[in-house]
Length: 156
Image (cartoon, rainbow, N blue to C red; front, side, top):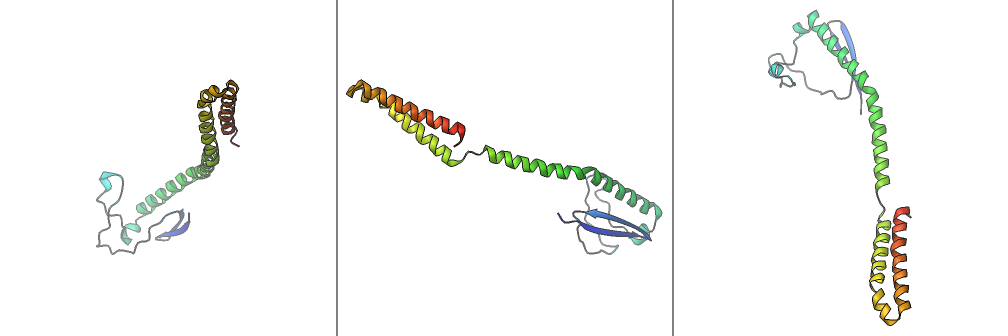
């Protein structure tokens, strides 16, 4: 964010403020209309540009200075939250990165479970050739499935 210092002179009274976004608009003549903006419906159609006669009024100057002080107080009140936001954003990025599982672990787990399950499924077929072959196939299949699950838990 870039901060711009602006200085407003109100008939000899000078106020200084720091703002993050100040629209740069060409000065308009008193007769031209300024697009209305605001949140309150009662103030929507009010022209926002003040004439030099209106600015010379002490009441207007006091109101503008009061509004400026109110905005500065609000800015000072909210300033600590900027740092807290950035800290929370960093923490969230770190935690989301830690939650991501690398593709190599997913591939390792899928291949291990797939091959282990296939070998366990072929256990009865090898058991017909010889009972010891069926048990060996079942044990090798279980070891593959268990190793894949263990590797996923440890995230090797």
